[in-house]
Image 1 (cartoon, rainbow, N blue to C red):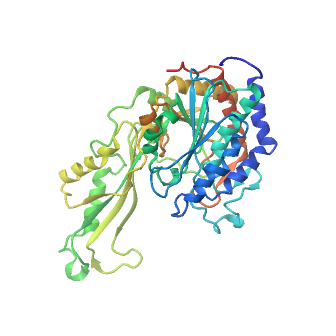
Image 2: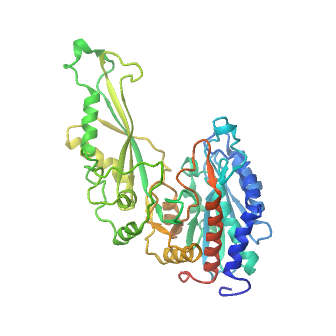
Length: 471
């Protein structure tokens, strides 16, 4: 069923573009955004279910997809929707990922009192919760599939569209779902649409995620604070001790000192991908501090190929109302982000050894994240599927995309790599200033329109067989 047939690639792209220009995309987006799928709220399950059973399925009307609701594996959590179209088992199968849940709407905090559950169009900015994270993005993938079916009469490959409803709370139970429904979700490649581009002018392919480990360093020396005049200089000060421990983790230029936190080797394909990245200056963003972090690495290598650690917060005493007393305790929250070259499970044990060897055995390490936190993952930038998708993007857009070895942030890539064995490719259609997760979340209309064109081209080329052989 693969190969050329009725219609043309340009025709499929024009149809996808027409969905945007003619208002069909916006009409669908309004309907999806209207469902308040706030997975962070304790009573969110009915809305999450409604998204999977009522809001999203109409997008597949007359496209020959079978809709299945996959029940969650954790009590009180929402289900997932799986739309499946199998044209021929011998053809490649693409698993398309999105998430229908959003962060809290924060009604009343948006500019001009915009309603987070309605799409407000203001020039090229489309405001509304989920316009970019992530309803507007998986809608791009779905309507681009429609454009190819309408133009060719078929896809030329098998498609499975999987939309979960727990990503904003760490995708609890997603791995269990992958194990339980492995046969239903089996595919040759994972393609997800989520996150921002690094720039507005160059499309991105992101091939995984950095892992994230967060923890508290906690030091409690006594039960109570004691008068600074009588006890200052006599009692050990937990604030200074904790500060000294923190200064042992990175040196004065930000270079990490903990053995076991850094990659022993960065793969050559990752270095080559980082060297090829294009980073135009974005107004309003800070300039990197040239002398901070691992010496000899570029900004791209520091962000996409190395480990970082930051202090999220630190406290001793009562900063809002200091008292004249030697304090009994001090605490700091740290966050480590690491690539697939470092095991997340090794981060805290390595720090424990580091602190003990330097006389800080009294400082406790308290993990601060739940069990379902996202782990590090990476698809090789030179994987044949990555190169095929990159070639398709360049064919449509007229310039090669940035190929990022992994996202600088976190996502559930590792679960799909581990449980389904698929290469993972993310194609973001937002930008850094979209106010994702805050009031005034918005999409940029030109990026949405570009996304429809790019995805229509990718789907067409996969159907033409311009991809690695199945298996």
